[in-house]
Each structure stands twice: as structure tokens, then as C-alpha cells.
Image (cartoon, rainbow, N blue to C red; front, side, top):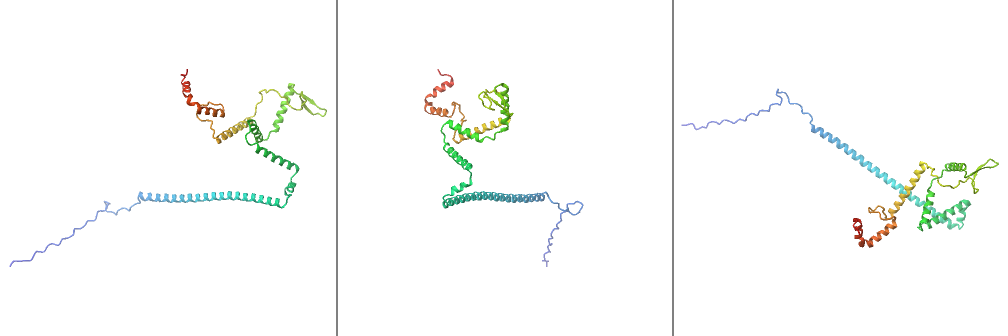
Length: 284
């Protein structure tokens, strides 16, 4: 009888895994990892962000403080104006009440002023009324007179010492030239007399061109002229008048310019060919 048993199959075995060899060729332990450049960049970025947020907070606090100061200043100005209006209204109301209670209030109030002060006040009020009435344009002579008086009022205080010194020098020159006669009284007073009997008065003579003004006087004159020119240009700009229109100057003043513009509006269409011929030089 034949053997029917099967031979036993060999049991498969797992292959052994080999551990990777260490990086060090000498079999030593691997080195400790060092901090990389990326971690340094992250730390620097975090520091910059913190600084940026601090600056933003400071900017916001500064903006709020500025806004608060501006609001406080506006409130103070508004309160000041409101208090001034209230005080003015209170004074007017008090004046009306006192005047209504006492018919002689005005006369009694004037007891506090002297006669000279009262007359000076009346003159000032009359002068103000005349100036208001004379405000409109009448003629060029009156306008020049108003400008002259305004400039006289705006003049600085006259240097009397310099004026007296210049007058004495002129009197001395005229005495030496024989235009004035020097007279001495019994009391020892000395004065000059001209042919008309005027005392200490320089004689009118032709301008000798020898007067040289000081630098301060020249600067003052230049400042006055520039101030007048600025005022003139400002007034013309307010009226919408522009001297520099970019074209040819064919006028001598503003009225002449307006007249030329009116002529151009009506007659330019008839004279265009003639003017162009003159400009080309081909006119016969």
C-alpha cells in the first residue's frame, strides 16, 4: 500500500528589516538640530508687528486727543461769542429799562462827561455821519480827496525833532544866501524875517535837487505804493476786471478798452479783410 500522506510545506518567514545606518560614518549619535533661519525671520516679523500695533495705538490716541482739543477750542470760542452776545443784550435791555423808568436818564448820564468830551463826541458822530453820506462815488476829485484823507489818517507819527532840525538848517541856508534877514531883539531872542514880514518861515524857492531822502523814507514810500497797487488790483479782481487778458494792448485805460470792445462787436465783421490786409502789408 502506497503512502498517501502529503509532505509538510515550509512555513514562510518575514525578512528582517535593516535599520538605516546612522549619518555619522563613525557610528556616533546624530547631531542636535539647530534653530533655522525661518524661525529667526518669524521672530523678527512678530517683533515688527508688535511695534506696528504700538505705533497704530499711539496714532489713534494722538488723533483722539487732537480732536478733543479742537472740539474744546471750538466750544470755548462758541461760549465766548455766546457770552458776548448775552452781555450785549443784557446791556441793551438794562439801558432800555433805565430809559423807560426815568425820562431824564440821558441828561443825567451826560453829567459824568465834561463839556469838552461832549463836544468831541458830537463832532465824531457828525463826522461819521458825513463819511457815511459821502461813501458813494461822486466824482474823481472827491474820490482823490477821500483817498488823500485816508492816507493822512494812516500816516505814522511825524518825527518833530527831525522836522525842526531840517527847518533850522533851511533857515540858516536862506539867511546865508540873503533870502531871509536875521533879527535879534533886546531880550536876546533871534529869529528870521522875510520880505513879507513872516517870522521863522522859510521862503518858497525852486527845487534845487540837492535833497536826498533817507533809506527809511524811501522804503516807506515804496511800501505805500505797493500797498495801493495791491488794493487797486484787489478791487479790480472783485469787479471781475483783468488787465492781463493775453491779447494786444490797444487801449489807454479801462473805459477806452470797453469802447474798443463795443466797436469790435459791431464792426469787426465788416473790417476783418481790411485789418488782415494791413497785417500782411498788402493793403493799397
